[in-house]
Length: 245
Image (cartoon, rainbow, N blue to C red; front, side, top):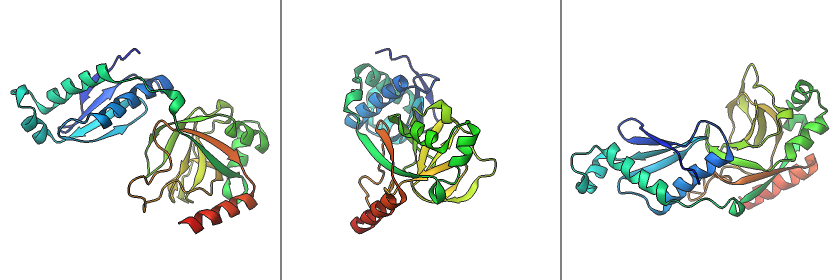
């Protein structure tokens, strides 16, 4: 695969590896390939990495890096890490998209669970039923997790339901709400202020702070498939979730 990239410093203890300027599955899978390689082959002094739409940020302890890589005497921690990352890019393996985890998420659309769905429909000259049909049709790619714990930024939404953010954000959006902002769709795992157009809610917990090993339902590289459920089904599934917790 074509691995054109650029490396830049990110403060005194970070490095950013950028694979392009466009939001695309191709660039995402290059970022994922590098992050997967670093999971298996971390360098001494590496602290963590953060995936974004077009780049991977890698944070490290510069003192440990310089102390551990004595063969690079005279070089800065950034130069040492940059050399290591360049080697990783050459060795990393292409991500097999067919092995991506598919997560099916039920949504109760409209009503008290999706107060903005009628606005989304009107904005796009569609019926509410058409909005639901278009929103549940794609298989979405989780590009990254951000904004708040477990919040997935999804790619692949049909442009026919693209809608601007609310002019006045809400002070509190209920946890598990599903929204649209521009050409993006995503879900609020926890209750938080926000300006996305809320079209529905899922009974499935998207973030569990009690699970220290894997608190987030979704991860970068996962695929998401939404499907519509009734309010009765929503309440039943929510009850099951409560019983399991």
